[in-house]
Length: 196
Image 1 (tube, rainbow, N blue to C red):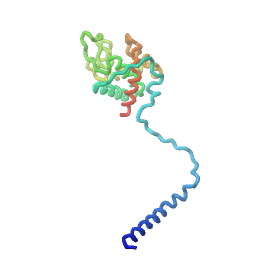
Image 2 (cartoon, rainbow, N blue to C red; image 1 turned 135 degrees about the vertical axis):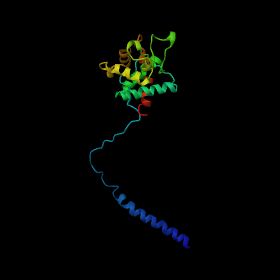
Image 3 (cartoon, rainbow, N blue to C red; image 1 turned 180 degrees about the vertical axis):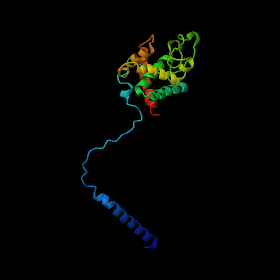
Image 4 (tube, one colour; image 1 turned 30 degrees about the vertical axis):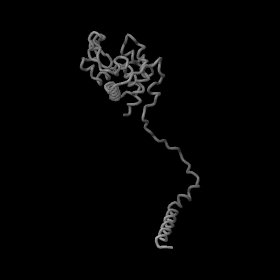
């Protein structure tokens, strides 16, 4: 055998032997019985909130959906951030976003002239004349969301109410059932953005 071939064969044999030594003890215990013990719980952070927290009662009625532009998406994210700042759960964000979808389609409305509903402004069409704040405050997404959430927290049992009932109790709208149609889209928005 030539020298090169001989070195190769010896090298492969050496690797096989070394691998067997290191793998041997592991392989020797492969047939051993598993160690008995208690199961260990492992905490895993979910990427998305649990849907039972977002829509605990299921949606009510036919659902509407709109495509959101960058401004509307930013406003939805501002609502989520304000909800977290208020220390409230995902469900409060769903109610807030569904309310804003109904009131303004997530657009931060200024004065609309003849189309304006009295002096309603901002994401939630809140009225300065009703004590929601100044026009500048109401058109600040964080302020208007925190004002809405303050009203929501004053509603006994809001967490267990259907969305439209909780929203209507805060907003006192002429169309109390209209909020329900936005629940699925609001939940989808919260699910997508809550942990981002």
